[in-house]
Length: 342
Image 1: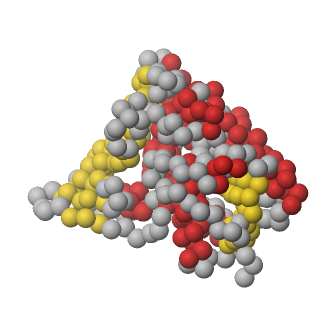
Image 2: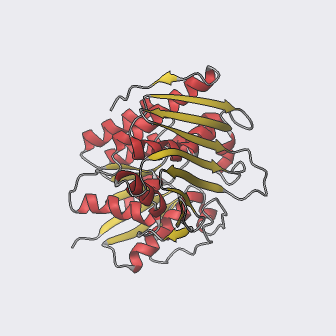
Image 3: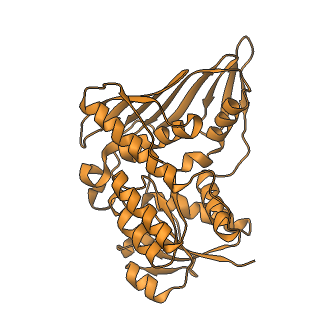
């Protein structure tokens, strides 16, 4: 079987989580090879970064070539796929560049700063004939996949209520403080809140209407409370970049079914609290979500399979939902109808 050669573009915070995913897959003899890492700052190749994912300091394998410029990488390295872990404001530019250079592209979320930029990325993928996927990692997270299974298969009866939270102090590790610039990060609503908005779409489809109350801080949309309305359910989602510096990162769900309440644990298990019974813990099957998303995308490339789990058109739709949330927030949380485009 052919080995898929991959270049990692950007080696900041989230790239460390991707790198750990590659190491895990290589230990399992996956038919992939990480041949190069590119970052404009050569110090990044040795720098320790502590982020919400608690990734460890890494030592790049000596076989991995390092570059500080994408054009030099393209001129000197043979590879099939680019894994883009650059700041959000660079996603569209470099995704389009690498697609047009004949590379498949896995790009970190958010797909881009606007749905218009997302459409440019989709067009570049179609025109180049190369695949594009956005790293909406929760679609590959074992605890959230078990939640989806519980809903789809009616394991605990009808779902009555769900709340998802993603709360953090403002991130400080970004290149040239880009997280602190709304024009480059899009604020918490686009950078972090988007995880749970996308998960709601993954679980229930597109909402009929949305409502968001948001507050500004270091950036616009620093904190938000969102409601996504479905025919028989309202998903409540909270996001914040405004927690105090010593507050632990929170990423959780609470799903209340007729027969049990399900919550996820920090170690990615699921606590089940049945009606009238003793609580117990489910250990869902699956691997690290970063490794899982890489494994899935590379398999679609190598085996020419459809991307049914996380197509880029869906990631574009999630950005469009975020734009609707901002519109609602600008109107004081007004409930506004939503019509999907894709």
